[in-house]
Length: 54
Image (tube, rainbow, N blue to C red):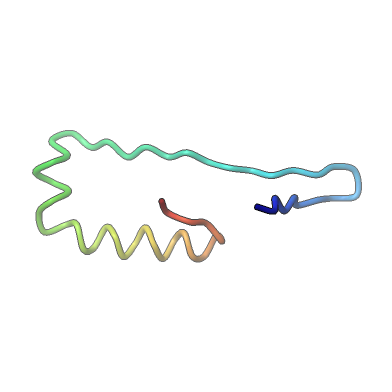
């Protein structure tokens, strides 16, 4: 596995984020009508920012 660092003239970095999304009554909300919409939006945002959803 190759780690690619981003850099400026004076620094290098490798940013990683761990986001936890926990709405109230999450099971009822996330497995209902909102699931397809939320999946689409989150994957589009991840694609725009060169991120991967695991």
